[in-house]
Amino acid sequence: MLGLKLPTDPRWVNIVEKNIEEILTDHAFCEQKATSTAISLIVSFPEYTDLVQEMTSLVKEEISHFKMVHDKIIERGWTLGRDRKDDYVIELMKFFPKGGSRTTQLVHRLLYAALIEARSCERFRLLSEELEDEELKTFYRNLMVSEANHYTMFLGFARQYGNKKEVDTKWQQLLEYEAKIMSNLGTSEAIHG
Image (cartoon, rainbow, N blue to C red; front, side, top):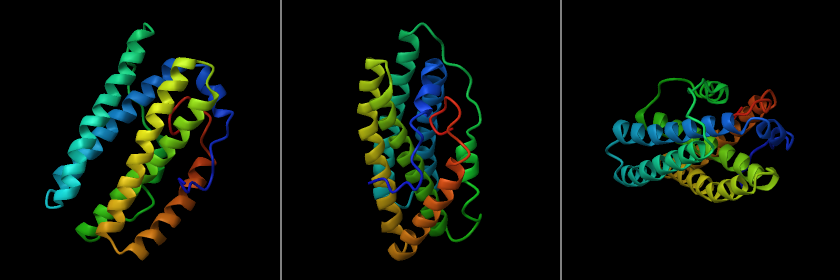
């Protein structure tokens, strides 16, 4: 369903289980960044009314996810750690050239967002199936569904605003590129790392 070309090695969960605090901190910041992305799309493309409406709802949902993760951190007696760079996103953002028309820029941003949500969904599925911690298994199963919905929403908007055939070609190329990135990641307790 997600179309990812390189699935996460299930052994990644073993890395995560050794430092749940780190994965929860990284996850919290991923939710915060997802909130920021939705706000940025509203600010950058206010003339796309249906996008603005959906992004407004998404802001509320993503910030509530941030709170849910933050609450898990507090429940376990920890505090939110510092954000760190996301090598996955840094590499991913190199795929599309800068510039182009506003529509092209929008489509590229939507495709990036769709892929990040798809990878998050895949990782959450893995956590929901493989973690020893039953509470977190359920937590990630519930979030996995949201991520899948976000992935399809962003991809749908890209196809709506761009030429569908061109968007689908770019999407496949981006998936191939992302697989190369993922072949060098999966060794840290990070949602995308």
